[in-house]
Length: 110
Image (tube, rainbow, N blue to C red; front, side):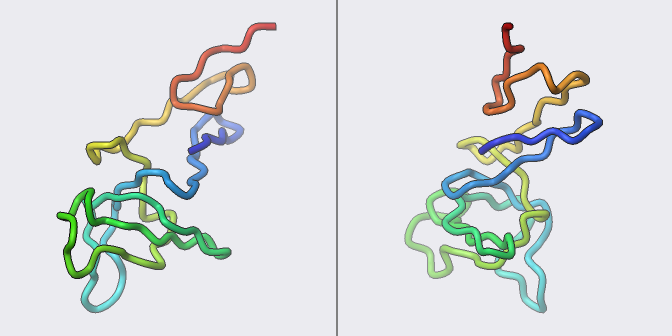
């Protein structure tokens, strides 16, 4: 995952296939198949930005009947670690002087 910084220094994750994410909102619809708090790995990202996420082996046991969810908006997820704990992205006041390619960022030397 990459991190982009807005003009005010607030972080915005750029999700990629293979990233771990945690749902912060229930899946939409009459009977949602994914609930807030579940987490898994991104399988695909559609052109419109919707995510396909595999939950089996992460927040659900391996081999369950419904192991994947599709069409989850990227605004409904946050990055998480390998235990499903949501990651707090670093905020920088002077973000132009940092290397934003990873979570452990250091000021670049010139």
